[in-house]
Length: 143
Image 1 (tube, helix red, strand yellow):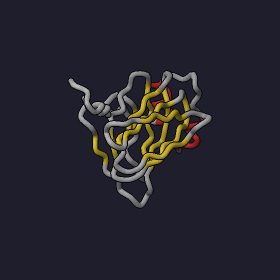
Image 2: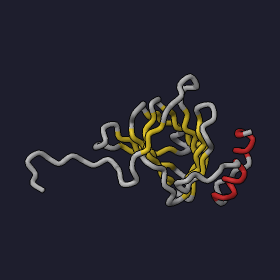
Image 3: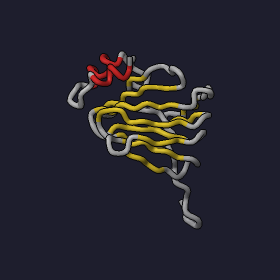
Image 4: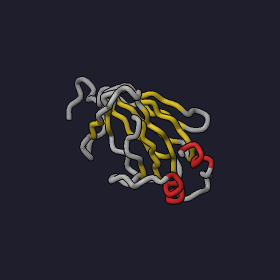
């Protein structure tokens, strides 16, 4: 069903029309997301939607499918962070197990899949709503 439904999506569609076409329910955080099926999630993020900081017990692969460029931000240590832009020119990124990550669309909406190996039942840990990677204080700096 998914590949055929993707053919019905155009970049000028409203996010609600994309969600309806793909039959995506609204997640509690505001974005649209499938339940985990075969270790794969389909995520549709609109402008301003929250994708909470989270980490999984298995490595994941991210694949941009449609819409605007998506910024995927990762932090392995909870201090340093790096962002990757996923789009039609760079569609894939990998996130190692237990690496904190979040994402946001850089336009009206972005559609991605998040997948882990089918043989692994990954568990997801969500950060508290006020958590984000905080840089370390420089040595010798007073507060």
